[in-house]
Amino acid sequence: MAEGFDLREEPWIPVRWANGASGRCGLRELLHRAHEIADLELPVPPAASGLLRILAAMTARIARDADDVRLDDEDAEQEVTTWLGIRASVLAAGRFDPKAVDAYLDEEVPAGRFDLFDPERPFLQDPRLVAECVDAQSAPNLSGVNKLVFGRPTGVNGAVLFGHFTDGEPVAVPAAEAAWHLIAQLYCGPAGQCTPRRITEVRTGSGDAGPLRKAVSYHPWAPDLFTTLVLALPVPEGGTDTDVPDECPWETGELAEPLGPLTELTWPGRLLTGRYRHAVLLVPSADRTSVTDAYITWSTHEPKPAARDPYVILDRGKDGEFYVREADGARALWRDVDALLLMDTGHATLRPHSLNSLPPRLLRRLSVRAYGFDQDGKQTDTTWFEATTPPILHWQEETDPRMARHLARCHQAAEEVGDRLDYAARLAWKIAADAGAATADKVKLDRRKPGPWAAAAAGRYWPVAEREFWHLAHPDRCDTAPLPLFVSAALTALDDAIGTANRADIRVARARSRARSALRALLRAAA
Image (cartoon, rainbow, N blue to C red; front, side, top):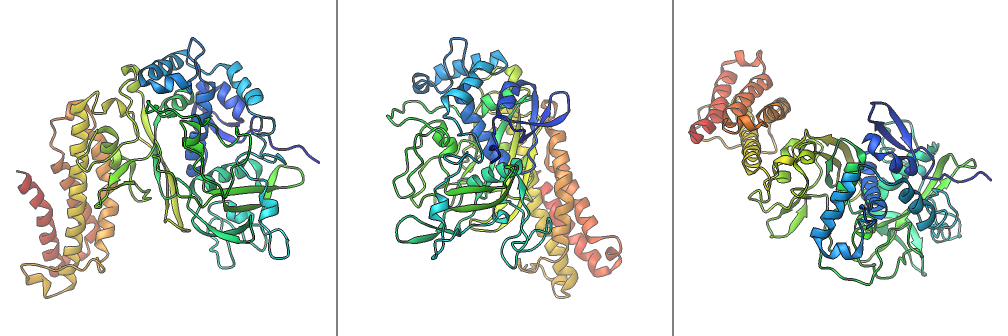
């Protein structure tokens, strides 16, 4: 039988090197040469988001300061100031120690744990599913390779959108790509019906959503992967004391008990890699170069632990509780900038990270990378996205309050104008299409019938608003009033949406004039 697929050595992680070349590398080369890597280039953003958490946990094990104190040192965890000093020393070194990397990969983690197809403990998988996912006749009850790969249709009536993949004629996925989707499933997998798993006499066939389902996560992004990974490790809260060892799934002595209580979410390993709600087992091809099938089922039905993911934005709901800001494929990253810079946006937003302890020369080079997966809470996947800001984290409120508040004003103005543009475009359509509305002082709008101009105007406005926002994102423009610029962009977007041919109609011309007045009213109110 062919050997397995060793994730330490096999080239499965797409990267872009500092010289601009693209390539793939395994875990060992990636950690050895992280300082030479400019970026991750995984084409599946939810997999990249999960991989970054996995690599951050590994970083805690291998990164050491000049005195050989690790970033996950238990004593340093109790005192945040001490931990920040260790991190500063690690950053000053500029790279991971190759000996520490090899010691972790080869000695500290048991043999076979990084093998995607290891018969006893395959990486991030549960080999017990072979015996537990069976039908009434004890035959294997597999989920199918199409269920594993996000973007492929599943079931008899699944839509063929990204390729001709059907359950009747499944197409194997290369092992490297299967690893991406394995990670994506564990972090963003669906809730509801799944392949039944029999542990007792009851075959349970439903599960919970993955910990990052329908979420967008935000990460400090440096010019090199080494710095990105060190900054990806969340700052310990300090003051916690527990006897529970902090272990990642590939480090534990025994597999988690599906029917038992959840282990405490210790920092940082379990916090970053211990919240999975799915169990997966890949079925390899004979030559171990691809995956031909998979088991995907539930891993636990215990209540989700009350722990905050360190890379998400929390917004306070109407009920006073905090909720994760959800991914929206139609919402650009710049519209979240104020939540990343301000300590409090006025809506009791909790941002994912504060980096004011870093030296200014490094802060000035830090961008924000967002990975999002627009999904519902159950089974429907809409779109995923990846976006990166210019360097902005040196404008966090703790270090540059003037610039942080200026950008917040710019975003608030853009949103206010966007809302008014939506109203104005719907108003214009109502007046143009309804003779009675043209002479009414107050026009009642039906949100269920917005007309065609609202979406067209929004599609034209937001890209221009983004350009105006980044044009304003400069210290020399802190005194520039942003509202007139966004109103001007909205007026142009409204005209373009209505179209020159339509404006020749007297009723449309009247509607356009009324809508433009509604937009200009924002300027009068501001004055």
